[in-house]
Amino acid sequence: MSPMAKLPLALASMVLVLGSASCGSAPSPTPSASASSSPTPSPTAAPSPDAIAPNILARDPAEGGLLDASGIRVTFSEPVQGVDGASFQLASPGGVIGAIVNLDAGGRTATLVPGAPLSFATAYTVTLSGLVHDQAGNRLDRTSWTVSTSNVVRFSPGTYTGYQFGDSPSHLTALKRSTVASLSEATASDWQTIDDAGYLLVDAGILAGYWVHGEVDGTARDDLTASIPGLPACDYVDLPAARVGYGQWGTTVLDTVFQLPRGYAPPDLVDTSRAGLNGSFFIRAIAEEDLAAMIKAAGSAGAHLAVQSAYRSYAGQVLTFDGWVSQSGYEQALRVSARPGHSEHQLGTAIDFKTVGGIAPWRYADWATSTEGAWLATNAWTFGWLMSYPKGGSALSCYSYEPWHYRYVGRTTAAAVHAAGTTLREWLWAQGYGVR
Image 1 (cartoon, rainbow, N blue to C red):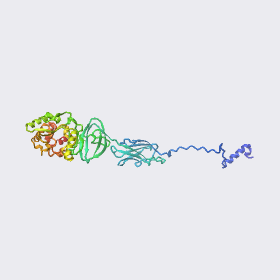
Image 2 (image 1 turned 45 degrees about the vertical axis):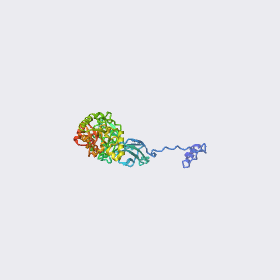
Image 3 (image 1 turned 180 degrees about the vertical axis):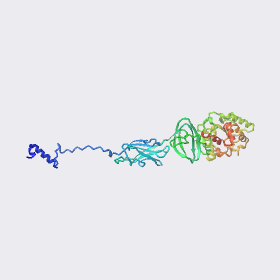
């Protein structure tokens, strides 16, 4: 008897059914409760990490941030590859900047360090291209942002020289000096190398309007020992005079380059009649005593002096210069009259003299040949008065010969200038008064 014959009937039937299914025939599906219903869809599976493109989690500096020599640092959402000088770049308006690009061992942080000094106050573009990808080959979306270098100039305590350049870097037109007592800052708009030295163009703050020696990182260079260059050319520019305090009246350099502020008006003006001259003209009280002594001495020698013109405000010089323009044309006016702000008359220490009862001194062939003109040319310096624009010195004084125009600088300075045999402008510049 077979083993199957020993099994109860019901169990034997079950074994047969199972056995037939195991021989490859598919069982019939069990009817559902509702045969007409659609099957329930399976939920969509989340994509695997290998299907997600990397992105940037952090940028330093970010959009509009300040870029310095330490460079740029970027953090990614996952480890990446393909970060190099072709995929991670820094560009200036002039093109791509050479740089050192590194990716950390974990592949999540990239750094870019400029391989050359950055330009001052300049906008740069940072770019990360689609060449950057993760291990599965998913590419980073190309992205770029703008950063800038600083425009701040830092001045440590010291003395600094400000320069102005004309139509070429080698053409120095003006300079001044400024002493800084404590750590200070200004802003600048440019930096460049001139004659192998770095210069920052200051646009606001200390020495605004001038170039100062400095580094591309905005550090100004103390140069108290910098030599004073030669006398500036007589260019027609408007730069602030270095010494405009009312107490600096004897050493203020005024010419076609340097000018006084529009509101400069001496506080101690007195009428010229107090010095024994015709009145309704004004000079500073500091000049009155020596002027009176000079007029008395001249009179004793038979030289009878009067005032043609004395103090003129900025507004008064506007009228005077415009008058010369109307009479002789602009080019000629520049040679015989100062533009507003550039006139020594605004100092309150300059007088145009004439002969008592005589015509305007410039109507003479040479007023210096008159009794009064000749006496002043010989003796005025002994009383502290100097002819500002002597004969043959136009290229140095910046104005045509004016034997009637005298400026009070005090007896000590006048004696020094007379002994040097130079124009007043030359002497003041050589002492450094044009820059401090």
